Image 1 (cartoon, rainbow, N blue to C red):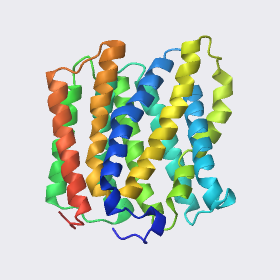
Image 2: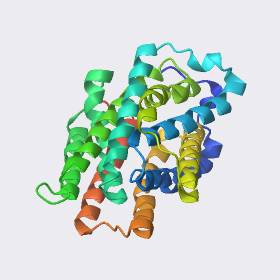
Image 3: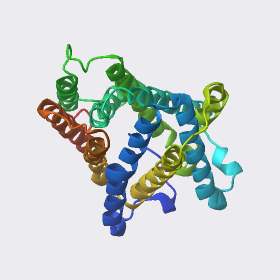
Image 4: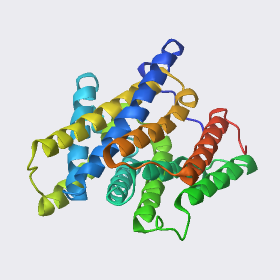
Length: 303
């Protein structure tokens, strides 16, 4: 895939590779698992749409505060891909609704592991959406990765229910979102794309959430909503900074560190710990994802 060069300030710097890896580890192991754990805590008392609204509001406000002083507020909404940006934002909204809904019933480590099917789905979507050529090796890695997912969910077991299907639906939406992100990067700068990511989520949830809105009734709930915003905003900020400091092929595998953070938080808060087969499936998924990422980073066509 060929893209237009990014602005100089967004090009990875070799001198900052270690800092980029560190920020990616903080994001993957701490921020995003903390975000999802907070959602799991809140979803038992509040509607999914209220949580999506709070999540989108904090992220949108943070991104505007971060980028507007340098780029200008109006410039953040000037896009050469309005339709694609709109579709991206809609897919991000659906991904959040599906994933947050699933967290009410499924353990945090399991949801995180199944969510790792999204990078593999991107390979399939890259053919019709991006016109990329995918060869037998990458298709083989995708198939093996989905075998890992089947090992985790074990069709016919108690785990196979609507919550699992919701995680897969969220992964499909997120994979389509990632594929479209590649397309819009050909014309839009990262700040524009970052702001558009949650525009429709904010608008849509602002319309729906008031019909099922509840005020937090305890200090823990208020802290959870604040933590939701802080973890989400800082997570995405660190992610953007990480990709501006180091090559994607180097830091993207560290994203699988989410499984570590999710497992620790899941055990400490809810006493959930993945069984042996969940770990086997997760390892297969992670190795398949890393292989696909490495092949793509080398620009191997049909590989």
